[in-house]
Image 1 (tube, one colour):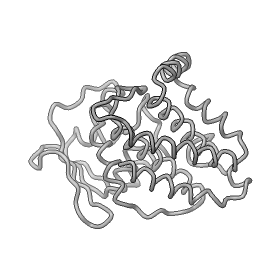
Image 2 (cartoon, rainbow, N blue to C red; image 1 turned 90 degrees about the vertical axis):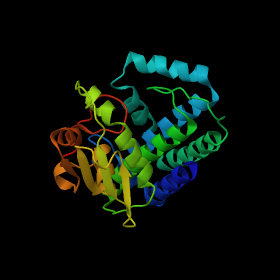
Image 3 (spheres, rainbow, N blue to C red; image 1 turned 180 degrees about the vertical axis):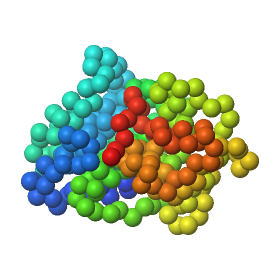
Length: 252
């Protein structure tokens, strides 16, 4: 999983490495966020994740500051780091993410790392960082008018999307369905990835790339090929959210 995270980070790095400084101020689809904000957010979160591994008391202090301003804490971190000169911002992200990736490989089996939600394993943290790096990388690619080829790394992101079904219902004040769904996605290489019992009454089908766009709320549902079979499945697709925090506003 760490190898996939490294590869995803490197792909995004390649998009911004040669940008002139002025291009870092280009607006992305996230309201109020430039390309600099996107990389700054990844740098901030990678720093916090590194702290969770190497300095648990320090991470507890981070949690305390977050509790003072739950809505604006993360955005403030991105805004502050986005003020750095682009070459410094990129260099800091490279150094921090490399340290995080190395530390993730040293986490002992069975250790749970503290986080803003439930504690998680090193593999789960790597997967979460992969999901966020891909999603914010998509914002950067959209800002630059670049279409990125989907990869097999989407499987881990789709897995988070499926696993967070109940969270999406709960964060929207809804009772999660009692029965599992069957999710069937077409991978970039044409193979099929599935979750849940094939005979489930509620079904989801579509391409893995579009499903990942949906659960990271990077595209509106109407633009995607993801199809629901059953009312509960349809409701989920309207609120699906693979990331932590309050309900996301989605994208126009």
